[in-house]
Image (cartoon, rainbow, N blue to C red; front, side):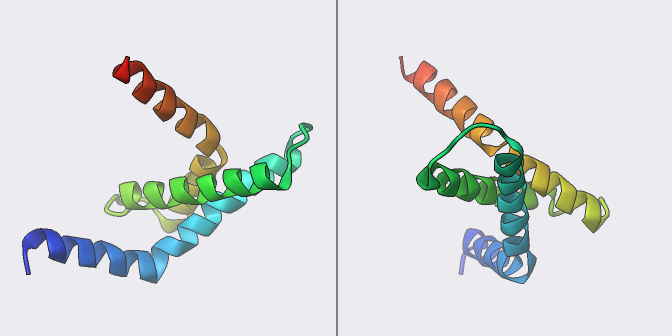
Length: 101
């Protein structure tokens, strides 16, 4: 087994033990934002945005995994990052499209 395979297996095990909670926190952060907004969205948009919040929550979890922050601060950061997920995805999409032109 190569070094890359071992590190991938380690990341998958870490996601199984605690990273999935950060996905839920990211999704809950986005859900809270949707509840607090005055805009009308369809169920499909709510689902897409909550899934995006979960994805960004997991990415934030892996980014913060080896830092020396208290777990409560990591949880708060994952929730906040999940709540700004649509803006992050839009920024990445616009940057990607701009570089292709």
